[in-house]
Length: 477
Ligand SMILES: Cc1cc2nc3c(=O)[nH]c(=O)nc-3n(C[C@H](O)[C@H](O)[C@H](O)COP(=O)(O)OP(=O)(O)OC[C@H]3O[C@@H](n4cnc5c(N)ncnc54)[C@H](O)[C@@H]3O)c2cc1C
Image (cartoon, rainbow, N blue to C red; front, side):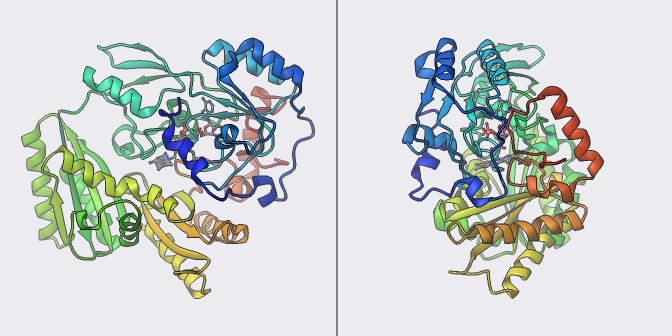
């Protein structure tokens, strides 16, 4: 188990300093006194349902075994649960949840714990219901491509299962080595190929527990081509995207962009500097991927697209991957961005849904705002601030390194960026979910009627509110 989950489990245990407890950072959060506290009788019951090695019970929530389940991937949110359960079947999930409901025990569903909104870790002492041991591929139909899998199947494992059969998963994201399909559904994961395959839909564990997922998988593309281009302004990044849709239409499978500052962070933390595929310094870079069924045909289309970009003076430089290894390297420069910034210090991560022209304006305005206040730069409150994302679906990731766990600094940045997004008719989350990180902004982002509908649904499905409490729906809605 340890090896398979190395990616995430190593994160929390690697941190020398753990982030303060979430309810200490957010003093307004109070434990719901309707919830019971775990007793020996409860533990006896869980032992009658699950085998002993599928239960971690540690009265000290900071002990190594349970700590990794109490802290999120970015070390920004921390709870103090002493109990983590690992069911292996739907029946066990059902028995556990029925018991928790009867005894008013609060529960937090947890998959790969790579979520970035603090949704997968407890706030107080909620029981963690981890899906890592529900990891069977139940059924695969080689004609239709329909796969029925347990919630705890790791995305990359599903991909490796499907590839030899000529199929692929219609979802790809940087955390694929650890995130699980139940977690992907629950967070509305989008990822790198949303423009081709769309995204998933879920409720972040607040309405129930996803025990299995049925998904229609597409054929593995016969031809994949990847190009990286350099651009001087965000305006030209948008032009390049529109031209990609014109010239590559049905074979366009990804269009990712990032700024130069993102490259600096990856160079300093993860990758060999000399390997960056494009020489010189450019304000922006974009990665364009095509997936199709005829290599020559796709290559020809991509070549003439790149030629047109140069003729129109849209791109300043560009390079086509010559083989799959090179394509992988190009992708790494994009995929390593979140991991690199997390490695370079306490990292705050945001994802917004905005009209395309506003995506980088938000980064510029944020930089400008904190620069003028003297808070942005080496050894300041925010040592850097970068912008990158999935242009194809209007999804911006803004990330910044924060001086240690300065909670005031986190709130200051939260207030500015969330207010900015709401003022510009954007969405405060595009694909990462609301979790605990954005719950305080829901009253500003949603109307009273919208929040009432959410609460009505929640009350209907989970009347005692035991499923992932304190998340998504603000108190008193
Ligand atoms: C390096 C990196 C890159 C990333 N890139 C992307 C990206 O490109 N696109 C993207 O969308 N996300 C991205 N993410 C965020 C994260 O990987 C996704 O949100 C992912 O879908 C979470 O899956 P998980 O299994 O880790 O879920 P967890 O983090 O364990 O849980 C996430 C939420 O789902 C709930 N949940 C989990 N399992 C269940 C279940 N079985 N039933 C009910 N509720 C459940 C949890 O309670 C929580 O609210 C990235 C994260 C990292 C660390």
